[in-house]
Image 1 (tube, rainbow, N blue to C red):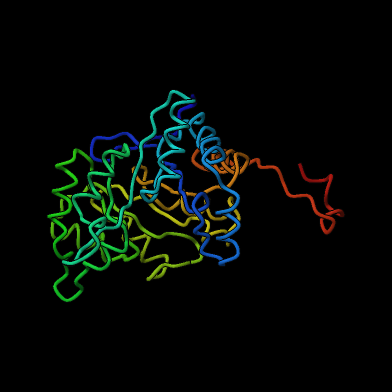
Image 2: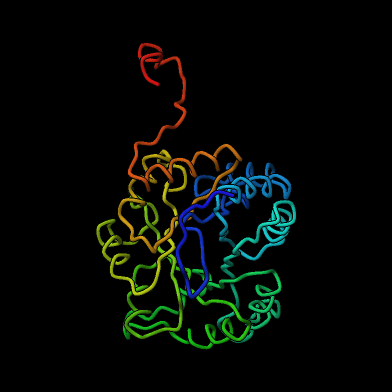
Length: 281
């Protein structure tokens, strides 16, 4: 197994490249038709094969929701490779009384532990609903982080709001990491990229960045070059891929960028490039 650069989150060693799962589970952020295509295409076997490519390169961390397709694929990849995956789950659960029994917070958090998660980060649906901009705090978050600690997982916060990092640090919330949207286009980000850059730079804990390619709107080399060059050594990049070849490509590009080398990727060959093809390696 190769040794992709790692960082430490709450005492746990994680690869700085994290396997995202939207392209496994059908969340394209592009169109309903593409969502359907992903869901029809991906299987446990295909996902586990992609995960094995990441594991061979030392990318041992996976982030996603607690769904059986993902959990089963992670288990299959671990069984075949003999390598333990650091599973980072982002569950949703009830935050108001009277919700469905299956959404009971302790029930959901205990299921994350049973699924093999080492880090539990309440999803944006939870975290951002608890955000209080008036009093600059995250309401009731302590009772959920305490539950996560009780089940021997590392607590973090999954969020789409830049304030989450700032408020968590100001109020001393018991977490070890947070998610932040971060890409060169500003896709789905609530503030400009320079603001997000400063928030990440000033964060008290390591940051897991997501959407580096703006859900397919940026070429891998373009999106990854921006993110890797503007985060700290303790921070991470989460990226989804749909095939083993895509996994190899983002691994190779990331390693070359981290080593400050110009990526040597295979170029796309099209008829419109025929006048320069053969002159470019």
